[in-house]
Image (cartoon, rainbow, N blue to C red; front, side, top):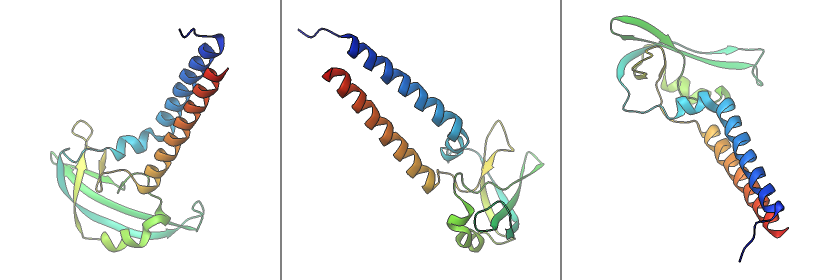
Length: 155
């Protein structure tokens, strides 16, 4: 018959602490991306128009340039402007694709939050870089849990 030991209990406590720490990290670091990345496509939509689409010199970006795409849309006869295309994608990742896809004057479908019309996106879904990051962190976390559980039972 299996009898829990002090090491098993310590392993369980460490596992719970690791889970809570990981959850807090994901929530704080990626809450914006997750909130935006899982932006449901069944949210209300409206028609918008691209009013600015350019690459601008930036001192903050690694390569010295930043992408700026601004679109305008109306909900309940109120005007809104946003620059959120899709969450979590860096400008360097797909700048040329975005500029050719969204030139000034292009009409777009804008997905917006029903209770917060100023929160919108034109390409729902999580960015490739964030999907890879979340998978990597998830894999690392699972590996740590297995390691802790294995060593807790071994001792």
